[in-house]
Image (cartoon, rainbow, N blue to C red; front, top):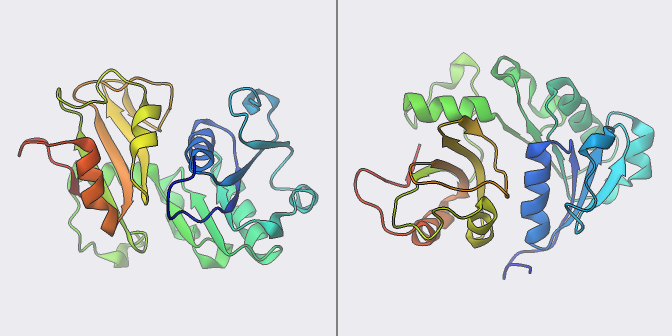
Length: 238
């Protein structure tokens, strides 16, 4: 079901690993037209995500992107586990096909300086940096002279610890993801097993820390979805 007020977009995702598949699930569930591209046959799961189109091919090959008619897409997300692949996909999407919005995943924080508009990247997301910032309590006014990426325009990072009274305790992450307000995405879950990307089939437990990327105006609706929390269990901006 398409959420009210959401304009349907065509989104191509390069990389059908756990991150790419989670993004595809979320976007397709919101009514968007999603294409997943991966050259690894083991990553292809047509039966698992029937609402998503699949293309078994190398996203770094210009011919592949031409076959996919990448220029017809509104957004391209380079979500593979290889930074070199993500940079090449971003550059081709922007320079060869003129895609309006290119989002890239950064796997190695040391490579952050590469992910800018010179490589066709409009927005770059670094899960390792995101989690490190949350742990270290980086202040909002970060000194950008050290080469760190600025926050995503119009977006905030929020976190919340799952409390015992939450309706999502012992429920699959997919139920939480489906209940999130417009403008919010679940980007990581921290638990005893460490930091993990969203996995719709995994169960949420009391004490899990959920990390969200949210538009500023969506923070209040997000708190309403997560339910009341006490002072020791805030859902606050990083």
